[in-house]
Amino acid sequence: MGVLASRRFAVFFGARMVSLLGSSMTPVALAFAVLDASPDSGDLGIVLASNMVPLLALLLVGGSVADRFPRDLVLRLANLGSGATQLVAAGVLLTGNYSLPFLVCTEFANGVLTAFTTPALRGIVPQLVDRGLLRQANSLLSSARNISKVAGPSVAGVLVATVGGGWAIAADGLSFVVAGLVFSFLRLPPVAGSSRAGVLPGIREGWHAFRRITWLWQIVAAFTVVNIAQTGVWQVLGPTIARATIGEASWGAVLSVRAAGC
Image (cartoon, rainbow, N blue to C red; front, side):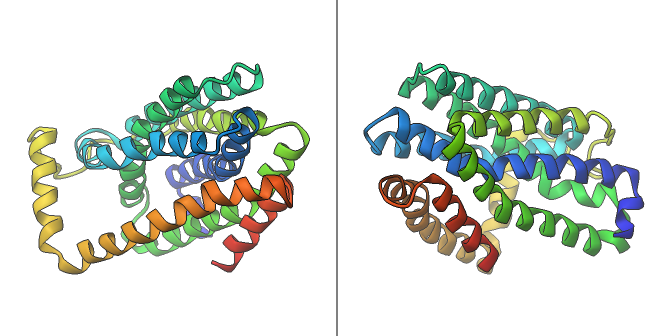
């Protein structure tokens, strides 16, 4: 815990805690909000895909941008943008004006912004703490991530069962806004030794390096299969069955127990 003595890391950790708790509620909240608004569970699959496709397509761009611009700036702008998209989505659901095309647009925008957030988050820790504290910092962040995965779904399930999924999505949006504002207290220079070349040359360079590391692309290929199988089961089929049987709060508890086991 001594790593929290670093002001930069303490600010970053606080922002991540807020954002992680909000994000961990979204899968449950979004699933039941869409299922409540639409009788077709296929709509939920479309909404999820509209978020995942731009995220996967633009991760390389996001990584290249994070290597060339101050990561605190990237995180601040991306979190504020993600907060705006989630709050708009929540407003659409809470007012009873459900529209699949509109929700697809908000989730698409959220996926684009997440593609810039994720690489910046992975690379920022060495800029925040000394090399000797990296292990402590990563352990603390992993613990926070796991705690949010255990607590978030149950909290979301209770919110959905009591006040509706729209409010849980609104809570996620607010968590992004708070995280973005907290990131404004961080001031980091561009990455030392970062390339002055453009974004596209950086993507090509990274792709060639990725292809050369055999074990890395093999793991990515394996998780591609795992994620394809699990996403449909846990994020579409599971909530659909739970809504007709055990209820929203119980499904949130199931996901929390699963996360605890993981």
